[in-house]
Length: 166
Image (tube, rainbow, N blue to C red; front, side, top):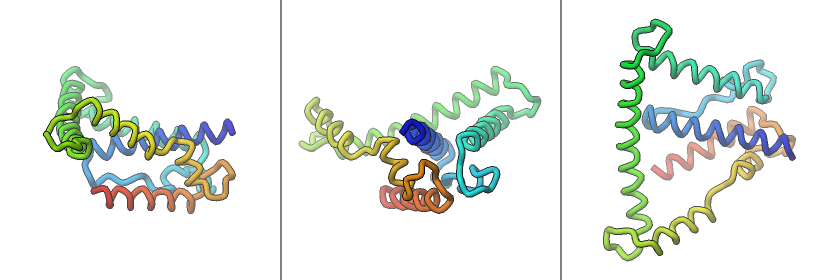
């Protein structure tokens, strides 16, 4: 059970990282292929492989921020990265808030009253999957490890849901 919770948290972390990367890089971003994470090619993803993958992603983000390639981040490079992220976040938040307002504004007045916010939050909590449920759905044989096939099927479901949600 402890292992399942740990792996579920890792999967949730990858999902969040991927969602964040999707938001930063635009709609063209896709979840990594199973083989990219399964570094030793044994058909299973271990915690160390997830950590290696995440470290590689961090190194890539560092290199992307190090625009002059000198191996260090200057104040100007960090500010430029922060400014780009801030601009991207404002755009994303504007889109999300507009969508949420449209969904939650049940009386159609263009404003959110407290009762509409509470109703929307309760609905979201009822529908939202926990990391454990996400992992359990992906781990079809319930062995505590995702195989390439299980990972691929979970990715397909997530991508299909993303296409349906626009």
